[in-house]
Length: 451
Image (cartoon, rainbow, N blue to C red; front, side):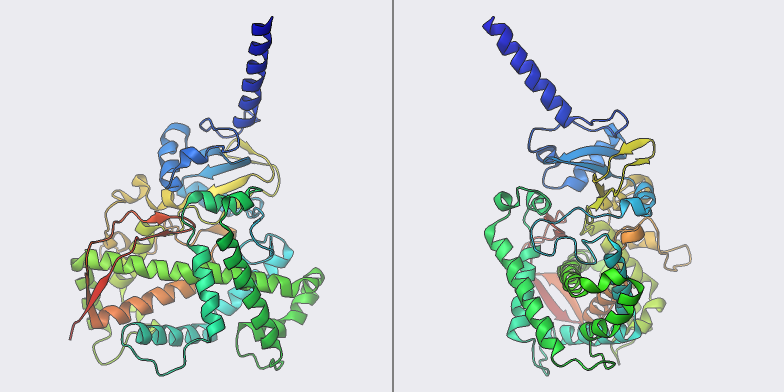
């Protein structure tokens, strides 16, 4: 009798686990078995984008996974990612549980207020004033970093503290801490110093915001914050709900924009240095085009970019092969939906595996090879390939893409117009570390004057 009872208990437990770990609807995408509590986190490993690409061979391009207790669907095909993320139903965001902004902000939000904020920030980021201002700041950055010029005062201590907190926050060491940002286990999984960095960064944002408003003059915007106050009334008329939470959403958006733009830009520059130092023949062609199109009497400007196809090809190849945001920002199904014959329940996390898109052999042929020519046609003209997913795609496409590309172009062309580079010590591996972003491991460079 005791054996029968024990067998019944064990069988019941196994059936319960089975029901929790396998898709609850037979029309849900296939996927591997998971474990209680962990789900599939132990199987995804340190580089989940690469793991999911391998799973595509067995389960297909759409796979069910569980991230802890959270159901998720991962898509590892560029065209399916583009199709899914082009639909409003897949443009939701899961709730971040690590800070007070929750779903307020251009990256994390998914309501009407977020739509209004994204319109505002998109317009601001892509304005001529923003372009001109960014070009000036990038030149200052290069002068300070390489040419040791320091004619202008540096950022005030509070701004530097904010950037340091931001950098420490973003440099998440592993995938588990990335997942912890969305789970109820956040207090257990996320280190207290990381949460403190976030709180400190947000406190500085709020303080700066209040101080800035004291000197605001309506109709005379000095920057994005002034433009926000000027625009607030007209935005409120179009969206009455917006005004009540406008400042909270704006602060969340400033935080989002800082997270999305600050470290990603520096990581991309690191990868540019890695690849152009590792492949001197590519660097030489890169420099020859700079010399031919710009010369030595002036530094490159954004107006030169359309005339420099090889430079554009190199920068796009760096974006492809480094795939610094391999899983993009997680999406959420906003309602029950059927996609490619599979049932995806409301609130399921939807993961666009950008690594799979950028490393798909069927598309790129030799994705492991650094080959800028894949972005050139037979005449040597630059070709922007839609299959490259460096800034995500669809309705949640990164609104700062143009700013990021401008930064990449100016920084790299100004630097390599003046310098060659060599590794000072051990060459870094092309296998970057993975947390929120994929970044190269620490390395040192020597800068050698060309002329």
